[in-house]
Length: 132
Image (cartoon, rainbow, N blue to C red; front, side, top):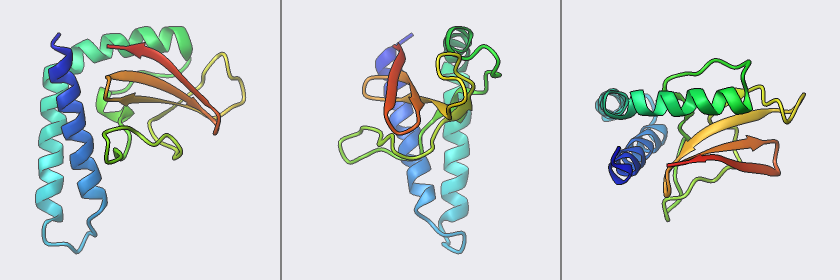
């Protein structure tokens, strides 16, 4: 697995998702950007899906065994900051039942720079649970 290609594709996908999120449904570019996003998602899942689904399966087994594994693109944040990082203050990623944090809202996110999975619990816990 080429980790740099994975990271670059992840950044491109999140940036396109961010671009779409900034458009209103009435914007004449909305449909084109949405189609570009779906194409990027399909390409990402084709190129990296098998690898990431295995990683996610292992992480789910360790962290949240009662939560189903979804497609890797479901774990993406909505946006990146100007320096390519993720602001983890919003409710982003996939909701999971984390065994270590019972009765707490936990989310799992796939983030770039470097490519990793972050377990976000409430406002204070940000735990790296896997790194490429």
